[in-house]
Length: 481
Image 1 (cartoon, rainbow, N blue to C red):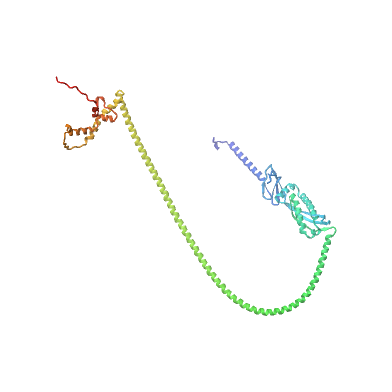
Image 2 (cartoon, rainbow, N blue to C red):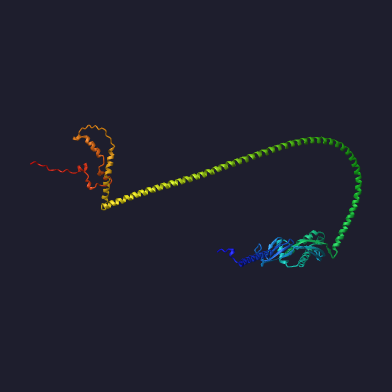
């Protein structure tokens, strides 16, 4: 059923518009609500999504899902979220009276910088253990862990190792402290040990001993250097005089050799210049030849490409013309075939109509003949044999005419007969009777057609053979009285 807008009342149209507006407003509100549930994670925070967050890779249920950077959709009524701050936390660790391996108590004031880790597994630990803790609580927890691990490390090292081999000390602190911090989701960013002291003054004594050793070594080194300086000065003067004389001699010899070398160098220079000029000219000629060769090759390639393009154009024209001629021939052949098919169909229809007409005419003739033959049988009292005899009797004149026709065209202009009168009969009479006997008698004609002459036409005469078989009757002689 179709209803046009013109047939609706004003109230119905207003109601439809109101419904559409309400649906649009609800859709906008739903989109806005969904947009508010799409949360972005800042680069300096870790977003912790908790609630129904799926399962981990091993199939166990996860308590939270941590995201560093990017964004995620928070499913309403099923999930919620919070942030963990990645801001570094600086912790001052003023460790005092830590017992070393030598049972000497030392003070190790240091400063540690820690923060929330962004490693996947460590972030999960932070989400489970630090999500609801404020920053000062996280700092206090990390400080306790650092104090315990620092005391443990100092207890395994000597004062000398702690004081002198700071790299080893810091490496041990980093390994032990960071391993424990990762358990709660933190990572160690930096360690700075300011100074190391002990209550017994062992470190100060080590320092004074080292200082005295350094001072004595320095004094000894100064005396040895002074001695070595005097001896060295005398040796230097001697060496100076010897070396000056030798230098003068070598200078003169060197000047002479230099002149020779200069001459040789000039000669080699001229030779090198001549050789470089020759090489430059050869290179220029070679470059020019190569340029000419490349230009020739480029021109030859261009000619080949132009020939290929012209050949392709010619082939395309020939192929297009051949395709057009082929399609034209196919269309003409299809048209000729259609004309032949239509002409053959017309001729076949005409022949069929002709044969149908002939069959109908023949059927009509035979039907009339059968109808007439039925009337003849009815006229003979129902005897089909008599009816046939009447038909044959009606055709006797035609049959006799056909027999006469058989010998009508025989032309006998002149017959000369030499009759020898054999057996007391003329031979000519026998010839004529034999010729007439060659024409089938009427009775035999009826018999060849499976019929017999009617009784009113007389009975057939007996043949010669029948006469021979019939016993001769002896008539009694009549005596004369």
